[in-house]
Image (tube, rainbow, N blue to C red):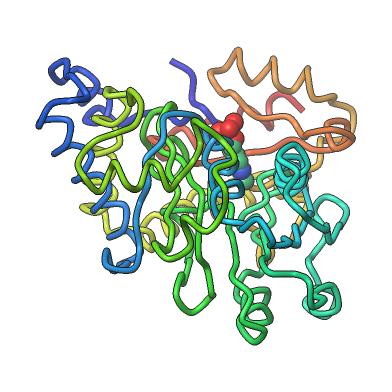
Length: 353
Ligand SMILES: *Cc1c(COP(=O)(O)O)cnc(C)c1O
């Protein structure tokens, strides 16, 4: 089996894999209702959110389905959203807004650049009703400064939509303080579940304010039915089993803070190990997430050689996107990865270059 150093799907723990083998279920039976209720409650508990004001809404689909559901369900008909872009995923939010004819403006930065609070402040003209931003921009590994961004939004009473797909369950998200009204995320990144289930953590009051834009991705429809114990469409039962198990494991291991420490523990060793053989990180540690860091390709080695040689040794690394594919590669350290694997990665890298 390969050690996956891509930003999800991740190597599963034994107990999560075993959960996939639980009994077959019909999604119109009480056993499914219990499973769904448990997951929804446990998702809110990750950041201690109150179920009176907040709801976890479960979808069958990858992280992008949660982004699309969030944007199309939360921005009102007469709203206008400022999309902050500094990577592929921010640009994806704008694409979604464009496809659905949601009124939007973008505040654009080059991939990897810092979002400047002053510029955000200027971009927030009176017509802007919502801000949408990526928390951890997986394109580069930059952890966007959500605290600064949201304090500006909060001072103007503008709600924030967050793509937390690659940060939820491993980075700090202060929902109430940060004026967050919705956060899209997935089962198969920092939560260590399997791909196929995603979700939006949403303020209840944020839904039902627009004409329905999508049949399949309308969060209000899901909310009504999930609150009643049902589901509008067939859900991916086995993925749900795995997600519940992964949530239990996450909780037992100490929650998001412990996961953040565990990732940094791994990443610090990789950064130091790579540094000692002349492989430099793209961004300073203070600007990075714990989840994924980018590194410059070493001198004479191109990406495909590096990838193939590492794969022969059991490691799957991840390419840069777009123009960055020629200059960087990415390492993510989510999932079941032991100390030997980290050491093995560093020594394999030394051998190859
Ligand atoms: C992985 C990721 C997504 C979703 O990608 P899918 O391939 O649809 O799962 C969205 N946003 C960010 C920041 C991501 O890292």
